[in-house]
Image 1 (cartoon, one colour):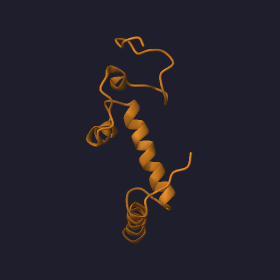
Image 2: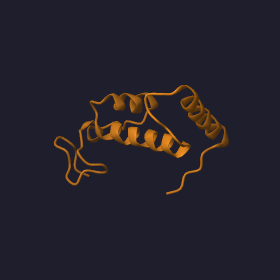
Image 3: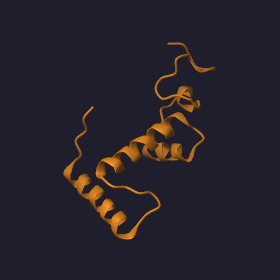
Image 4: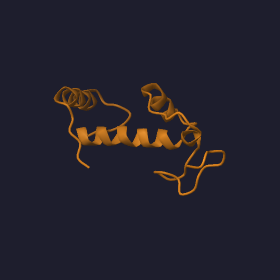
Length: 90
């Protein structure tokens, strides 16, 4: 997969890095790629862990699907190998 970042957003990401390097931050970020990977990882974690603080970020962005499947904690990433209890068969 290859992702293109809008130049305006890239400029903001670079500014975040500049602030981190100048002022410090709890999390060390060296590159825009590191920053984007952190955000992607947090989204993936929030998707599979409905009771985590990371899920609230997905809720706020409207990224939680309406349905019981997205309300079940999953140990692994991706679609479950078996259907979650209480969900409809497709």
